[in-house]
Length: 252
Image (cartoon, rainbow, N blue to C red; front, side, top):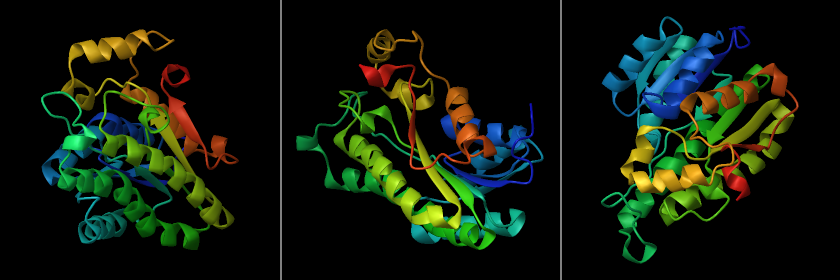
């Protein structure tokens, strides 16, 4: 694989498994040094060990400013300032495999999803942007969802709202940080084969598959390739974009 990211340093949140791990692996294979961040150090360390010499592990809660700040400081001390940030960490709580209706949702659950999925993205940008500005540029990619663009009966209102907000956050930050040479984009995955999708019944995933024009579920590698493109020089004139990685699902 061509080392398109040699000399780059990346921080990936929620990187112990699923899309985050595939993103971290993909960036490392392309030559980047990667900080694998997750809530539990043991999980992050296992992922970093599997990725190899280009990866280190740090633990932190993206929803907690002090926790994220400590994780960022530890990672920066080991790798230096970051020129790539991937805001991947996210949660989508279910009840017995189904979404919790808004009329029954515990406000504490709402707040936790907003804190992780949305505020976590802000925390990441707030931490890395000063170094990117000082270094003359960088690239940020946040993970949204097609559920942030269209109604989905699968996810709760908190998840859908945060994923829609990430699209708005991306556009605003692209305008604000563009003059500093920082590109800000997002990806919007469709139904991706990952641990998260198995919190619902097989019939739900079968219906999503049937509605996907390309006729398959996506993979974490599909998302990783999209992130690799958006953080590469090949996308040097691409900013403020939310790229669907959905096999055409978002057209329906």
